[in-house]
Image 1 (tube, rainbow, N blue to C red):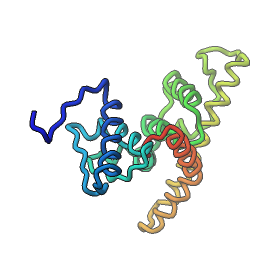
Image 2: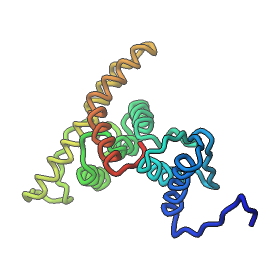
Image 3: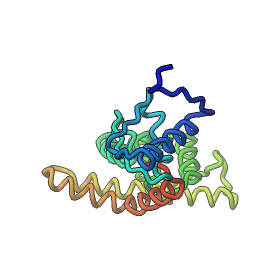
Image 4: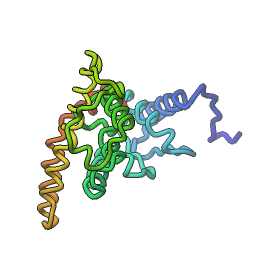
Length: 212
């Protein structure tokens, strides 16, 4: 092995990232390098990104990461696209579920799961989503148990939380210009409580020292 190369055995990707982070710190403190003089290259930048960033944050190392990324994986972008798909497609079930699964609405994962099961059990889609839910979550039964009533209330709560703002958004964006559509979209995001959900998500990621 050439003198200017080192071969290191690591347990996993995180172990690699910690080693690299410590090496960068050593080069700066002990050898007079500047952070901007150092580059870290990985064969799979997407796979390594969160581990490198987490290790660098712990070592207080400033860095810029340049790697290809599909913008659609970002929760806000996915939510906005799904909102437009939902109103254009007349509230297609999968589009509504896509909005909820971004976790940028005030609905828990458990509530979304109950809601999704209810939609498929009763084949609720399109315009049916705009009507109040009254059918038994357990299926064909005239009697509602306490658990059924609780699940039905959850389904209706989730439905109203996303469908009512979408209906309003659809009405506001009929025959209007781009400026009015932008204002309506901003209002929709507020009604869906996206800013609050983003704050919560940021706090959770910051606590775990993960990239946002």
